[in-house]
Image 1 (cartoon, rainbow, N blue to C red):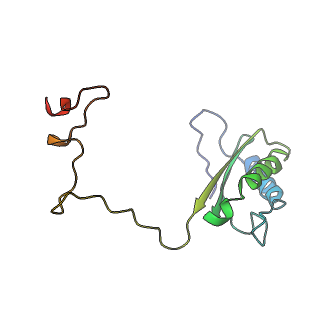
Image 2: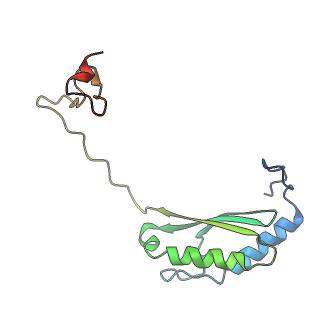
Image 3: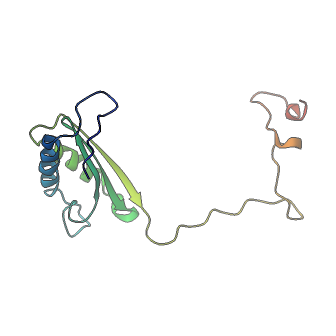
Length: 140
């Protein structure tokens, strides 16, 4: 779906020329490959949220956590490929990762004897101010 609303910065709205630029950028990005992917970054689905507005281009490169270890050179190559497209005046490419499978759960919070949570701030849970003498948090 094409965004036809005026941008917040008062610039021109999304136009057919922006759509054409977007297609040329997408085509240029098909020349960029990640060493761990079988396809180019467009065909592999790594390019997400490609937007153009008035010559400015932005997109996200999304890789698995394992593939992200070697993705920064790919991000740089993608920015260069997009910047080389005639009509592009600026490029922002953001690298993100996703984790396959279940995420590790957070470690359990420590508990005091008897199973009660620890309260490192003392009575009322207040932390002493930096540089305040010990016990200052309890006096308020």
